[in-house]
Length: 111
Length: 117
Image: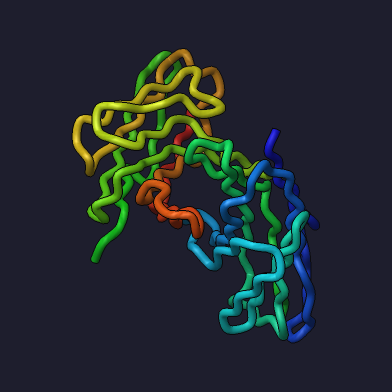
């Protein structure tokens, strides 16, 4: 059964303190791994898609990486506006079009 | 601007009532989805539709019903059979899987929060 586990569940950082969020997955035939950002009371907003091990993508202070078993979302010198819940999801060859989501990591960045 | 519109944003339901959540998209996407989000849990798939007049059950379809009469619209009805309907409901859409390079990105609406009184 396809599964996605995110850690930690919650993370508190000081402004400027870099860290990483983890997304471990088991899926048959990975066709895509997605990172989303979700602000309280709003819908998820797309950040990145990664397709194959070794791939990396960057956007401002965020960098996503992918291995055969996990993905990391690295946050460099975060700012308070980076505070949000970050969701990871996978799409596998056996999913018939369905994304499988992890439970999310809630990040709080204090000034 | 293209996007997904969900309404209402907040909805209150009494015991025994059916309620319908609206989802409309103008992205010309073929596939549409309904997810439920509870605190501390990931998004769970309720129903999805990859083409008009066809839809499939997701992982937690019991107590819910949908229809897909138009490409742009995918309403979700929360029936009285759903015993714990208080949650945040998210509608999403994308173009169907195409090509060998990867899946297309899901675009989400702003969500509807349902509370049972």
